[in-house]
Image (cartoon, rainbow, N blue to C red; front, side, top):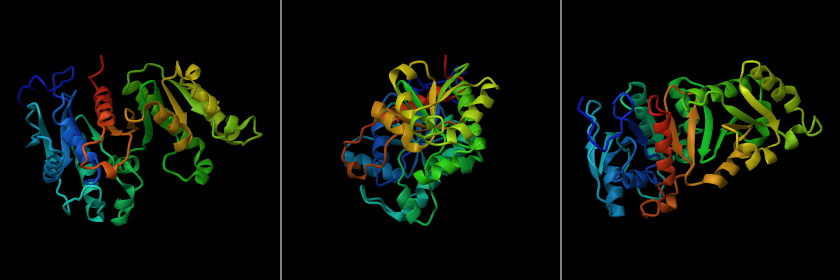
Length: 339
């Protein structure tokens, strides 16, 4: 293995930090983001898992210079302005802004390759660009999201967490219709999610005793049973049990007051019971600079916090802030990179 060049980051053991990047939906802004960051100084070497022709076409449309080089796991060198790639062929040439179900399987193939590189140690983690769930389903492939798909590939139980400066929000349930949430909040599920959240805050983030604020499910956290019994029947007993195992859990708290500066100032993370309970607050605080993180996996995975933005594809107006934040977050989660 060659010695890393000066612009290639390394961990405390001197190995280059490498991240796989899946640009996601080829008709969206993911390829734009790959082109945009190719010329930036990054804290890791990025390997685009994509069809190189897609990247070349998008760079030409954007009027951006792009130097591509095929990724060699045994070569740690990286030149400024050069984007490494691992070839995954498109099924059909993309048209920016126009979804094509023919490329639905391509998107999933890029994810499979990125996971493979993570598991075999060729890269330290993966960062994902935005996908379009609808077109993947239109291609005849059942797909509910990155989180669930990556968990299936790695045979793991996932916990979705989004992070922005000053706030981390994990979710007890993810992509469920609202009417299905109460039945999904079971004691085994809640215990499993909280143990994973506590464990990964300790191991991935180096927090010795994470302080986690837990939302109630109902308004006013059930108001002693007057507005619902899930807190009394499920949430409170689970929190009591886990406190006995030295987890630092506060709650259940009403969601409308949990996310106030006074409550958050000493919190390491919060747990929301469903998707739209905590994420609107986080995205209000940090949209464009927030990061989606999958905990509970044997690999590091972060993602941008936005969608495919089909109307911006190829326009030069795509913002790279969330991708840069996702790269920084992934680097920080890799063992040996934190002080």
